[in-house]
Each structure stands twice: as C-alpha cells, then as structure tokens.
Amino acid sequence: MTTETVFEPPSLDEEKTVQQYIDERPNWPDGTALPSTPMTGMQFRIWALACAGKFFEGMVVFMTGVAVPLIAVQFHLNSADKGIVTAASLAGILVGASALGSLADTYGRKRMFIIEMIIFVVFLIALTLAPDFITLVICLFGAGLALGCDYPTAHMVISESIPTTARGRLVLSAFAFQAVGACIGTTVGFIILTADPDIDSWRWMYATTIIPAILVVVGRLFISDSPHWLIAKGRTAEAEKATRQLLKRVPQYPKSISLGHLQHKHNDHGGKTGYLTLFDKQNRRATILASVPWFLQDLSTYGIGIFTPTILAAVLGKESTSNAVSSTIHNDILGAKGSALMNILFIVGILAAILLVERTGRIKLQLVGFIGCAVGLLLTGLSMRADGSNDMLLLFIGFTLFYFMTNLGPNAMTYLLAGEVFPTQVRGKGAGFAASFAKIGAVLTAFLFPILLKSLGTTTLLYFLVGTCLVGTVVTYLFRIETKGVNLESIGTADDPTRD
Image (cartoon, rainbow, N blue to C red; front, side, top):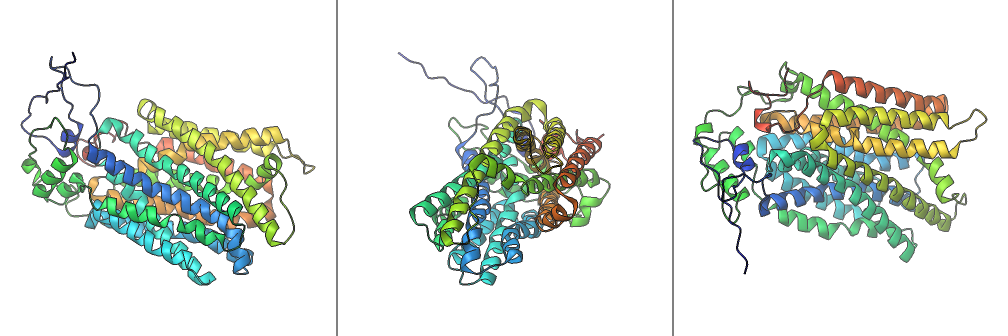
C-alpha cells in the first residue's frame, strides 16, 4: 500500500512581488520547506522555446561555414565576396541585438519573442531560394537580425519567469544549445554532402531548419508574457493574470496572487528608458561590465578561428589543393569534421559552467576563464618556432585549453551577466547593446585579422590576443557586479545588493 505525499503551500504573506511568488516553495506536511522551487509546465515550455532560438543560431551560423565553399563555386565568389557572406549573419546579429532586442522593453518580451522567429523563418525560406549573391547576403543579414534580437529576448523570457536559484543554470543551459545547434548543423551539412555531393546541396542544408522554426513560432504563441515587464509598465491586472498562467501547477500554490500594491512602484527611472539611460551614473558600471569584456572575448574567440585550420590540418589530414568541384566538397567535409571537434570542446566547457555558476558565481568564473584563455593562447604562441615549424602537442594543448576556458568563463558569463545587471525597464536595451558592442569585435576580427596576420605574423597576433584576455580580466575585476542569487527586481533600486 502506498501513500501519496502531499505538499502544502507556505504561510500567506500580506504583500509579495512577482519574483517572490515565483520563488515561493511548498512545505512538507511538518512545515519544512522543500530545498528548491519546483518548475511548472509553463516555465519548462518557455525555457525549451528559448533553447530553440539559440539552437537555430548555432545551426545557421555554423552551417554557413559548411555552405560557403559550395556557394563560392556556384556564384563565382572571390575572397572579398566570401568574407561578406561569412560576416553577413554576424552583421545582422550586431544590428538586431540592439535595434530589435531593445523593442522588448517597449512592446514586451513575448511579442518580440514571436516576431523575431517569424522574421527568421521568412528570411530562411528566401535564403533557400536565393538566385544570386546579393539576395543571399540580404537573406543572411535578415536571419542575423532575428538571431540578434534573440540574444536579449531569450535571456529575459527565461530569467524573468523562473526561480532565482535556478536562473544561472537555466540561462546557460539554453545558451549551450548554440553548440548543440552547431553540432547538428555541421552534422546535417556532412550528411547532405555525403548523400548528395552536389554544389546546390547548400540550399537543402538551410531548408532542413524551416519546419522546426515554424513549429517554434507556433509554440511561442502560447506562452505567458513576462509579469516583471507588465509590472514595470504599470499593467498590474495583466501581470497578475500572467503570473497565474506562469505558476499553474497541481497542487496549486500560491493559492492567490495579488500585485495591486505594486501599482505605483513601476519605472524607478522616472520615465527615462532610452539608450542614454545605460550611461547614467546608476547604470554606467553595468554597461561597461556587460559590454567591454564581451567585446574583448569575441576578439579572441573569433581571432583564434584564424589559426584553427593549422590544427585541423594536422589532426584530421591535409586539404586538397585542386580546384575541382570534388576537391571543394572533400575540403568542405574536412571542415565539417573540424567544426564538430570545436563544438565538443564548447559543450564540455559550457557544461562545467552550468555545474559551477550557482556555486562559484559569475565573476569568479569570468576571471578564471579570461586568465585560462590567456594561458592557452600563450602556449599556442610558444608552440610556433622561428623556423616555421610547430610543436603540435603544445599547439593542441593551447588550443584545447583556450576553447574550454572561454566557454567555462567569458563566453558563457558575458552572455549571462548582460541579461542580469540592468533594471527591468532597460534590460532589453542593456543586454541588446552589450551583444551589439560585442559583435563589433567579431566583425572587426573577421575583416581585419587576415590583414594583420599577413602584416604582423601569427605569433605577434597571438600575443596581442593574450593581451586582450588580460585586459578582459582587469575590466571584469574593476567593474564587477555579482548577480548570483540576486532577485532581478532589486537591480537598479535603492535596495540593490549588487551596488557598492
């Protein structure tokens, strides 16, 4: 005979905020509270749909890397044209993160969460049908716009709907789906190239994403909006309804939700929610912490990609130098294998970050990660001898250490912190600005590093990247804001525990 465990709601308080309702834990019959707050079906749905956006980003960006050699042959592209194709989606992310992501502060998290995916689907369909180079670039840029918008919105829909103690783990686990998407994207590219080794195969690669993306659009229509944002806009009744929808569970707790006492507590900035608010005295420190280390991290992450072919050629085999179509496809398959290797390192690093983020804290992981990246790049530089030969063991160790440490630290933590350190009223603008500022580093790297590589040399450029990692360490320490366990409602208020 079995007995059913019954959980009881905790004792009722007079007044609670949205996050206090979300963080509320049920009690055992003896009055002891559970060690954590159980997630509801709606909370899991929101998290899964946010994961999908990061998945598509990784899939499309890395799939483009597999597709570019085929596109170059079909449209007769030169080196500059190929650079434009590679940078198009990054440029779209740069613009979309701030231009579209910031609109979530005005029109709501849910609305932009839906609109961004509709934009993505439209440009993705057009991309598979692109008849020429110009149309292709426009479609990649448009897809990037949508993916850029997802940087702040995906973070916010998760962080503003889940318990405080689980925020770091769940945001980072969604971010990890970028690597999962990259693995799937390169795998799909490999399978399609193997099954149908044709120059036109790149169209089928992108086409595989269309139906899953449409299903995500439909799923996002049926989620609750952010009660935090609704309260910030003074829409109390809607916030109460959204909170009830978000926290629907069996047995039901809390039994009732009342937010009327928050009616006059929204918008602590007194109506100032424009971009200049990010640079006022209250938010300047957060803006620097969210933006500058992310920019420096992107310099090194995209910069090390310049040296990846050297390692892959040694580990996976030599590329064919023939201009034949068959050689293009052979080299493309080799590149797909190399991308899969990098994505494994990404996943290992991000899994370590997920396990440690709520124990160690964001700032410590970012500091350790930046220092580890500097060591990895230094080892890579030392592996390159004056006579042009390489110490391949040292090169591989440095490369592996860099990829693990960047994903344990700055690559993961800069994304997480950017969505946590700003008040609700400007969180979309703050996170979007940080992502856009970071992608300036990515785009600059894509265009300038090949030139600098030729003029300065590989070793000098690697030591420059060591310096950027050390600068990232210093900036993180000087402007540190630890958000582990911090209620996001307190950010930017007089009771903000993250301020000195």
